[in-house]
Length: 207
Image (cartoon, rainbow, N blue to C red; front, side):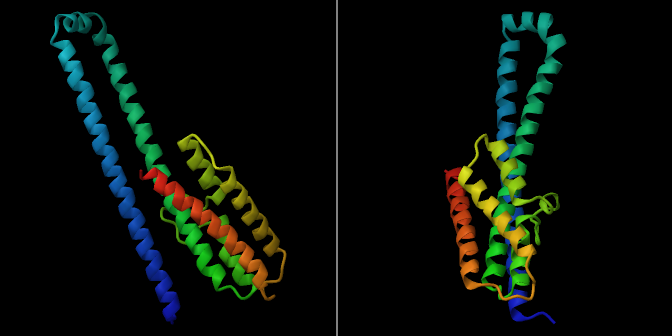
């Protein structure tokens, strides 16, 4: 039978996944509207051009052979943009999910085994917001995110590297051994710093 604490955790995780899914759907709706608006504007200008004398000449000499190719280029551009935005949102929510997961289980860790369980989120998700990110490590999630954004945060990658090192270190210890409070505090400090940067980047993204 599940304890009240376990039930609360499951309910919190379900709420987070629901919020993540709603946010992703909302963002995709906005992107779709943006693309539709841009396409209408684009083809509106094309129609204006075609209704002019210059446009008629252009249509007869160029557009007949090149119009389909131009449309495909425009369509491909926005498909790539949509795919990148979807991946970015999913990765950002998954990173936040991992951070909260690590914090929760690490705070309650009394043994090395419990700390090992908490830090598994560095390499694999316990409760993924989407199946596509379940087995991606934090390093890969951040790397993919920074590739899309076109820049990277060296401080974030350094923190993640330290968490990976600590996870490897814990794997060499006996799961039944007590987990030192000092070590727990150091790990929580790293995770809290990661969370602060994540929140800051989220605020900047929404402005």
